[in-house]
Length: 86
Length: 273
Image (cartoon, rainbow over all chains, first blue to last red; front, side, top):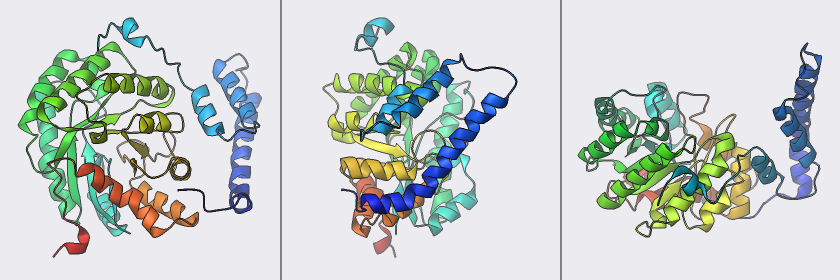
C-alpha cells in the first residue's frame, strides 16, 4: 500500500504542523537555557542534540534512526547474562 | 465505517466511552489482561480481575452493541514476583473455556529482566499446552528495541509456536519490520505521547503494507485516547486511501487474526438481527 499523495501535496499539508513542532522544540530548548541551573552536561540533552542533527540527514529512515538513538542496545548473548537457557 | 479495536483496556474506561466508541463504529474489541496501576497481592486478586474481564465487561459492552473479547495472563510488571506469577498461570485454565476468551496475553517484557523472561517462557508453555493464541506486550521507550529482540529470540527458539497465531504489539518504526519478517502479526498502538501516532501508523502501513498489521488504542488509565482508531481511519482517508484498504486494517485483519481462536465467535453487524 503505497503513499497516495505527491511530495508537494504532503508538503502543503505538513508545512504548518511541522513548523509548529519545530517552534515547540525551539521554545523548549530556550526555556531550559533561561532557567537558573545548567543542564549542558546532561546526557539526555546531548541525545536531543544528536536527534535534531539526524533530522537534517537525507535518508528516508529518519524516524527509525531516531528511535534507535533513544534505545538501549540489544546484546545477542543476553541469555547468558540473565542465565536463561531457552 | 465499522471497526474493531484489538487492544483496549476497558476496565479503566467509563460506560460513556463504550457509548462513544459504538457511535464511532466500534463493533468489537479485545481486552488483554494488564497491570492495574498497582501490584496485586494474591492469586485471588487475579481471579476477581478475570471474572471482571470475562463477565462484567462483555455485558457492559453488549449494552452498546459491541462484542467484547479478552486475553488472560499476569502482566510483565508483576512478573518480578515469580511465585505469584506461577500461581496465576496455574489458575488461568479455569477461565480459558469461557465465552470470548481469545488466548494468553498481554504477556511480554517490561524492563527486560531475568524474572520477566522466566514468566514469559512459562506463559508460552501454558499457551502451547492449552492450544491458545498469544498476544504480546513489548516494552516502552528506551527498553522497546532490546525487549522486542529478546522476545523474538524466545519465540523463534520455540519450534512449537505457530507464528501466525501470535500478535506482537506496540511496534514502532524500529521494531515493526523485525516482527513482520519473522512471520508474526504486529500491532501498532496509538498513544498521545509514547508509542505511535495515527500519522506514523499510516506511514508504517504505507511502507510495509497491511499484511499482518493491526492498529489499536490501548485506551487505559494513563494518558490515552480510546477513539484513536477512528483518528487513524480519518488519517488514512485524508491521505487518499480507499475505504477497502482502510477496512482491511481496522476490520478484516482483526477478524482474520482472532478467527484462529476457538473463543472468537463473531456476530458481524451486517447480519445482526
